[in-house]
Length: 319
Image (cartoon, rainbow, N blue to C red):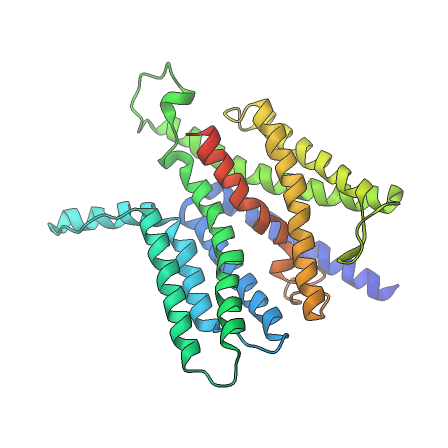
């Protein structure tokens, strides 16, 4: 009993410190949110490489970490470029401008080439498994989490003002308008996080109370279809609340669809990570977050959900 009480206190302590910090950084946006995602990415990537290593072949960690950092950084490149160009213009220097997508492509290609070159000179590892483990971690962890930075940066930098404010006659650079749109960006990310939390909470308690039909027993014996359905309902509720209170640009239909996407794919992300941990023979990806496991454990749903939400909002709603 004392062990359980200690574990519960650790979980509460981590939550009391972590949740307000995350809320602050998400709402602050810009380099603050970028910094948060960089930290989460690098730690989760390190944990992923640790799981791969347990299979007997160590990824090229320094290459993976470097490329992972650059992948996430490519999603804030436009902000960096604009801030940096202010100094260039003042100094009279001129440099060619290339796009965020171009930078991302170059980083991934160079990372692939560098990984293969390093593997070429290794003797004691499997070239196939080391290459796959290194680049797989970059794609699964860094690219997926980087899309959250990309989504946050849409607000207000590339937000289509004319589409949502057709009667607005002021300047696009109007301070009040930009502040409103920037807050929408923060609340969008927060709505996704709350939806994932409601999904996990509903799935756990409903599954614990009413769960009879196993969802995927080979991977996660305790998960049930009853819990999974409740999880989807919880995620939909989270996005509908977010739309109703904070992000009117979304619309009810899109809120419901996004909630269903988060509910389904968030739980799939949890199952995928469980499968990887089971393959590696461990319960948690690490013990960094006392009582919560590792960063990969805590953000596995977000890793799966982030890219889909980014594509849906940026390409379908805002385009």
